[in-house]
Image 1 (spheres, rainbow, N blue to C red):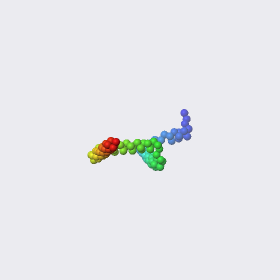
Image 2: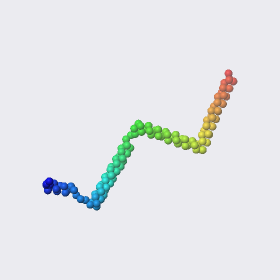
Image 3: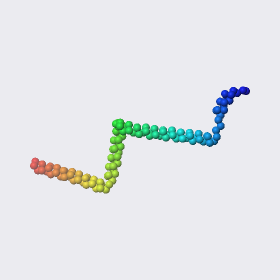
Image 4: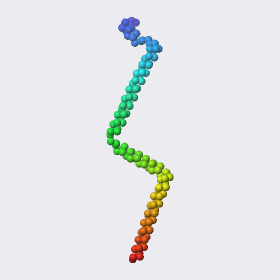
Length: 123
């Protein structure tokens, strides 16, 4: 078998012998390039996230977001009300309020009874 000189040169060019140091250098270079690409990708992602936040802040809330915000607000108000109701000062104030309501109703009933008695006496 006869091999042409051009074929032999092509084979020699394709089969280069590399040392361990050359392989390590190539790996380091490849890792550095990969790290650079990852850093660029993270930067792009961070920029996209910030732009998305800016855009969402400029848009008016959707109906679902409005309903969700209202529901959240309601839950927070109920929770705060329950926390407040457990305080001793609030309990004592509630007792006073309920007592004043009872006294007011009793006074009205007494006035009605007096009015009825006066009406009976007049008749």
